[in-house]
Length: 250
Image 1 (tube, rainbow, N blue to C red):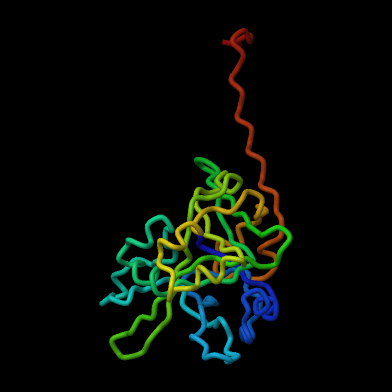
Image 2 (image 1 turned 45 degrees about the vertical axis):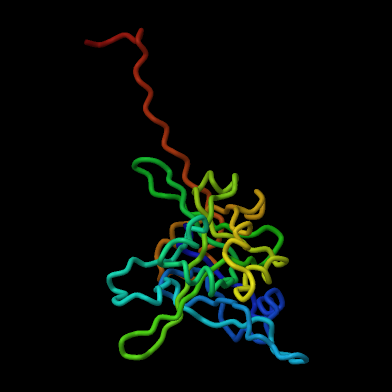
């Protein structure tokens, strides 16, 4: 799964990678958590011949998709992730998978490794090697509240982890390469089956796993210190049993 990520790149870098005229101004965010606003990129309106409209648009959504048919969001689980293997068939994601595919710009994500009984999970900052940004596959929906107001919501699409990341966690976000942005975002002519081949783990080595402190566990903690390398404490050696031939005092 993906439960925390970061976007610390400059707005102009986001604009350049995603072919946006204006991504807006936003500060570095080191600890983006569910229910918080996240930046999503979608295909823009169909341009008229000779028009210079942007090919894509960016806007903020709430992280946690609410299906359009929901009557009472308080009774729905928080849908922050959609499994790429089943999203096209699940009622919660089926419509978005067909009509509202998106990209979420990210500087990396956090994942936690189970360290065994009695030990806290070890957080890792998963940062892309040699680049400042990656694009997570995402789905979005607009939910109309009973009072008439609307809220845009989104979920990150996940897949099986690549071989190197699987040592930490068995799931990870689907990463869409720049050369596939157009395909993934094209909901006019491409159906879910036409982009199913994009929902696979990246080649091993795309991300570097950096062990970090458990500061990231608390949403209130922000800042670059969350991504500083902190080597895990070594496991305490177990007491060795007494040798069978050791002399006894009793």
